[in-house]
Amino acid sequence: MASRVIVIDSSVAVKWFLSETQSAEALNILGGFMADNLSLLAPDIIYAELGDVMWQRLRRNILRPVVSQQFVAKHSKP
Image (cartoon, rainbow, N blue to C red):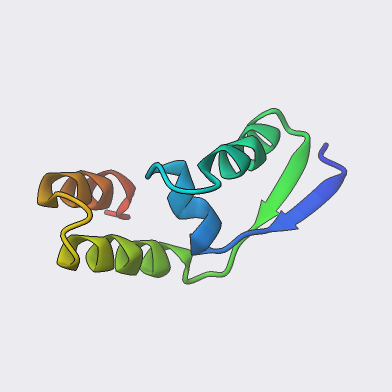
C-alpha cells in the first residue's frame, strides 16, 4: 500500500501523454503510482480538463488532429 498521496490535475496528467517541459517529473509521479509507492488523487473533472487541453492544442496547431482523436478515442468512457 502506498504511503504518500499526491493530488494531480490536468497540468500534470497531460505530460504523461504529450512531451512538454517537466514531462520527466510527471512520468516519475506516474511511475511511483504504477509501482504502488504512492497514491494519486484527481478532481472528478480531470477527463474533461484533459479533453480541453487537447482541444486548445489542436486549435493552436500545436497538436495534429489525428493525435487528438486517438487520445479521445482511447481515453473516453463508452
